[in-house]
Amino acid sequence: QLQLVESGGSLVQPGGSLRLSCAASGFTLDYYAIGWFRQAPGKEREGVSCISSSGGSTNYADSVRGRFTISRDNAKNTVYLQMNSLKPEDTAVYYCAAAYGPSCPTAWTEYDYWGQGTQVTVSS
Image (tube, rainbow, N blue to C red; front, side, top):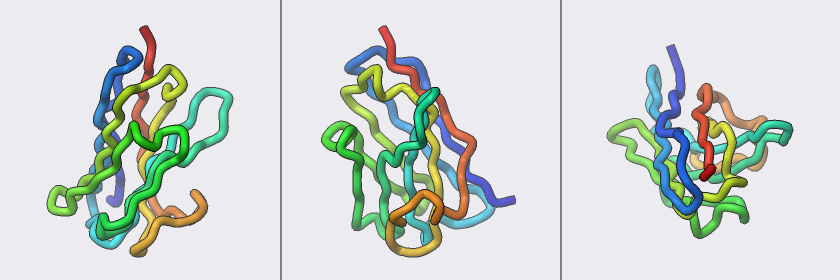
């Protein structure tokens, strides 16, 4: 069974840090670009970051640039999202998604597989 599983979400105070993981089972991530998305209650899904299959190219939403870092360890079949200086507005369910091919897609509809999400809550 092909699936992505996110982990690492939690309740954290403003200014704190979390590292999310996205682990694949049933397939190898080597040939997939991986994106992180988030969705807060009552809001649309938002693209957060993406990393190319080689790891050589990354992009970030303006709202997280300089605070979040995406990385991948293909040997562990896992992609990470390091989140620092967290703000209450970062509160959301975070999803990872895999798109077959070397480059990050331009639209979320181009992703092939999605995880179930992990909750991140930033609150004092």
